[in-house]
Length: 223
Image (cartoon, rainbow, N blue to C red; front, side, top):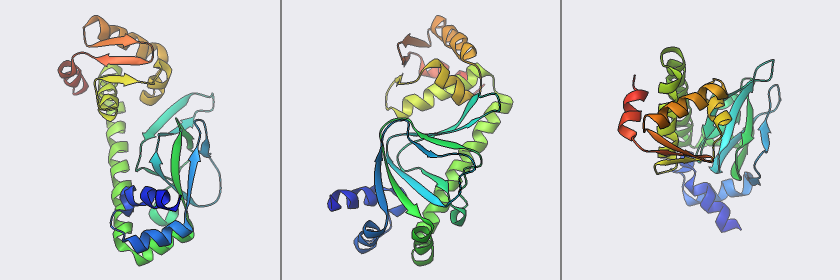
C-alpha cells in the first residue's frame, strides 16, 4: 500500500522535482483518497483551506445561477489542482467541485503546502506554473464566449475532448453536459450537432460523437 501511495505521489506533476526522501516524508503527512462519481469535494461558502491534487479521474468545477442553471467552469483531469488555498492563490469563488467519475486525489492541508513552499521552492514554482496554465485557459474561454458563435465553440470543444480521449470519438457526454460546458442551452447544442451531421462533419451515436472531418471542424473552430 505504501509503495502504491509513493507511486501516486511521484507521478503528480507538481511533485516531479522531489527526491525519494521528500516523497516519503509527504507519504507520512498527506492523505490519498479514492472517491466515487458524484462526490462533492467543495461547495460555495465552505470554510477551511484544503488543496486537492487530482491523480486519477475527472472533476467538474461549476456554478449555479439563482434559477438553477448550471455553468461548467472547467473539467479537470489528472494532475490538476483545485480547492481553497490562499497560500498558492487558489480559490473556488462560489464554485462547486464534483467528481465526474471515480477519482483518486491527494489531499493537502495548509501546513503541508506551507512546508513545501518554504522548503522546496521548485514545488512552489510548479504550483505557480499550474495555476498560470489554468488562468490562460480561463482567459481563452472568456474570449471564445465573447467573440465566437456556438457552432464555432462547439467545434473547438469537440476537438479538445477528442484529443483528451486520444482518438476521433468523444464519448461519455450528453447534449446537456456539452451545453453546460459551453454556457448555452441543450436545444442549441442539439441543433448545432444536427447541422454538423448534415454537413458530414460528425456522426452521432448514443453518448458518442465521431469526428469525421477534423480539418473542417478545426477551420470552423477558428472562425
